[in-house]
Amino acid sequence: MTSPPLPYAAALAGLDALLRQVSGERMAATVNALAGESFTGRRVGSPGGAAARTWLTDLLGAGGAAVTAEAFTVANVPQVYARPGVQWHHDGQQVPLVFGRDVAVHLASTDQPQPMQAPLAVAGYGDPAGRWLLVLPGTSLFDAFGQADGAAGLLLARGVDTDGWHYTMLAGPNPGPLPVLSIETGLHQRMTAATRRAGHGATLTAATPIRRTEVTATNLHARYRHASPGGLDLLLTAHYDGVGDHPGLRQPAAADNGSGVAVICEAALLLAAVLPEGIGLAVALLDAEETGALGSAHHARRLIAAGDRPAVLNVDGAGHLNTAAAVEAGGPAHGLLAVLDQAARHIGLPLAAGPVASDNRRYAAAGLAAVGIGAGMAGYHSPADTADRVETAAMAALAHLIVATAWLAASTPATLSSSIGDKR
Image (cartoon, rainbow, N blue to C red; front, top):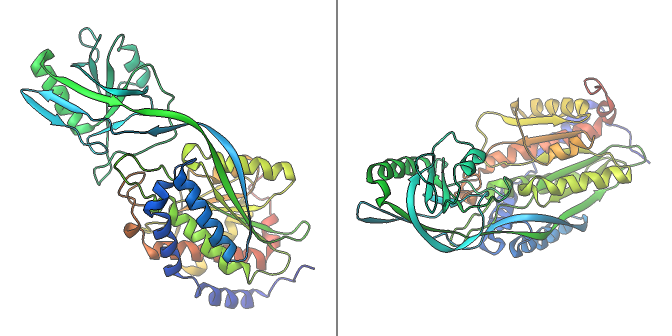
């Protein structure tokens, strides 16, 4: 039997008591654990990802959830498996380039495991054969390959983050026919100027050790409460995978998305014990988000095939809150978004419409009401994404938002059935 909705004033009083139970210490402990060395950045299909999954299964189970795992295949996952060992030789100097700061292996690179020394030249000027080509900024990758007939490889200018690190990406272009390295923009400019000045006297020695493999990814599904027939079913989601460590470079993936996982687990733990009977509650901790949100795509297909239509709240990046949390709604989410706005007003958290390019989009594309929520992060996809830079206050703010949204939705579930603004 479904419990009747609480009177609104009583609902708010109960909500305030529940919000006081949100624990920043619990969430910080979750982030610290997930960012630990034993989980090695949690790349999809890696031993570190599997270790994190085991740890998370125990965490969810300790909160009273029935936890199941669902595996699926992900093809062509890129992995830099050795340091590229780049040396720039010019004007009588030998300059080693620092992996991760000065240089990175580009996703479009072919696998070249052995260091290769070749003269430097500027793409589009002279014969490219047998040379490492410095590609001028503004040149597309397609055009760069077109200028590189017989070249040893391409050197593309690429910006770094405020901490001086290259961004690590797992989703991007397929490998091309040549070795390709990304060079920090300022260094690329200096290399180009020196190469033009010295003619053919400058050389580069480098490898591009990158391979693509097929791996097994695994989503975790945790069911806390079952919905009554036709009743409200809430699905809280976050991806637990990261971009993984590089050889000699730890990439802890603390904010992205250890912080989101911590928020979702905290909210579910508190809500499971207090939601009215007949309100469903489940958590999906998703794999392979960094390879194109493939875990949520897989899960969304399964939900639709089973005839399940939960309301989805996804958190990606709860590490830093400036002034407002970013919110992106998709699918038939007008009613869910209205309750989210009401919850944000109650807890005093400003919201701003903005892109949340994460798993929420996969659920929305499948026709489910889905809202993505983010609060920023430091050190995105780099060694600078460490646990000490995740703000406990930011996680607490988003946990309050999720708890309040779920509580108010459960107190007045009929509001979520509104189709205003959802018809196309």
